Image 1 (cartoon, rainbow over the protein chains, first blue to last red):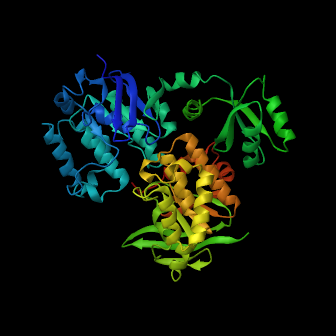
Image 2: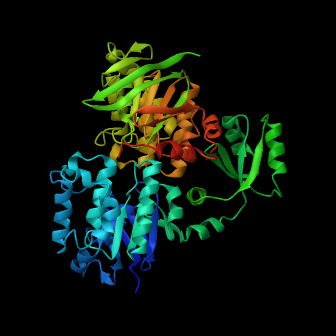
Image 3: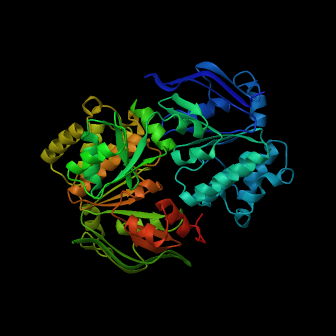
Length: 303
Length: 245
């Protein structure tokens, strides 16, 4: 049995009938680390809220652990863990009181599943008498993860756990998720950071309520249809302008210290280099590069 | 080169805690300056002082030529500010937001009218001008709030994680706006957690535990730390952080 099955799920909001989620289908295997990758407003939170039975779908169906999100919401609420994007613990309870509260609501104790949260909780322990509202952002995030884990959920839903978090802490957070995966917990996680996609077993790229692509990160990258080049020159501003104006350019955009570009009808990089040279650019450096998930996402957005 | 931000040993203490510890740097006119650091490193504290919102415990600084202790109101008039959290009023229309912020910064009615028209033209928002800001997608909101932050032609604009959560195409369009403003001579002071955006800055500083541990162009920093990416530079520096969160 799959951990999560989503079939033609749709959600519309308000008088203006804003389509938050549009005909979305995917499934998640047991023990899989599955990522929903997309910007704010793509529909990630609406999907999470429907899967955790907090929001009713307008159309389509979904199951978690085989239970229907509408009919069997009670069972689902007992077995899943959910960490919302917005901090939702009790601000006026202490760290320890929050954790105790969530354990007791689910009929368990901190001791029973301590091994699951140990690595994370150790970092919080010295603040255990501090009120949750007084914690720093990173500490709040760690406490929220502990509270979502304390009843040993079968599926853990994490809605943008790393948003606004610096790159070092983000890396640590993903290492924690990998350890949880080894405990057999299925993890569904969303993020707007494209570079985190490679940490997932499979990902869905989502924008405007629709899934644009769904596969392993490796396969999504391998399916990039044309050679992609990284280009550098003495003047980045002019380079981007000229790449944009070149008749053989398919896509071109800034990518860190390089520009990324793809071309139609060129056998190698000599032709674009000649063009750029004639445009007055110097110190041109160009090489074929492996696309990243961000490149794939940009291509899908521009299609 | 004209210096628009100059700090010397700028320090802010909260009780025993030194949030910003003797930071010294200069930022030049028209420069895009990236202000990086881990969560809890002291970026927000430093930025609040530079904006005239928080008085330092010690040290010196001038912003747009004004003293950080005595001329905070003049500083506020000469800077622009936007963040991901506070940008615009959701329950005002796009046009009303432009008028409101124009008024706050003391533009005349004529200036506000001209500015509104050119801004809506530039962003291609004719259809949406009379719609509530709440109905705009995040990327549009952020582009609009940047334009509003530079409406009064400030010498410096402070951007606090302006592109968080924005899709990769809109994120790049946002940086086009930044480049244009910098070309007009506006100084850009920006924080970000996207390391590719650090590469778009002329120079960047990296704060660790309240101190500026590195300050240089992205290419020099990579050389200094023998790193192939800014991500690596950041990781090498911030990994050693003791405090923070």
